[in-house]
Length: 61
Image (cartoon, rainbow, N blue to C red; front, side, top):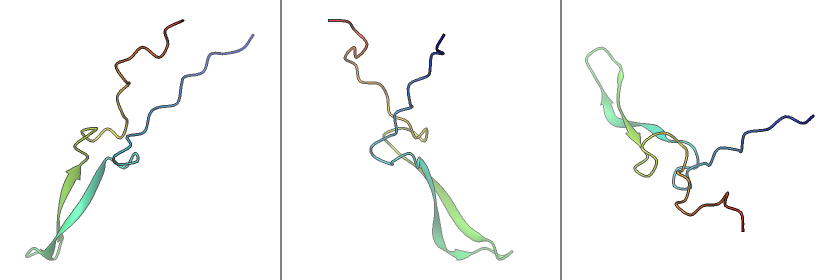
């Protein structure tokens, strides 16, 4: 008996799965730490996966 496998997750085409990035602001604070901000992919909202298309792919013809 074969086991059912889960379909592979869909990787976001805009960020290629790297949904967030740390960007330096150019400088250091008083303690010497590098100032950074986190930027998230606007298409997948930081998840790294794309949504399924609205058409029914699993429908039988």
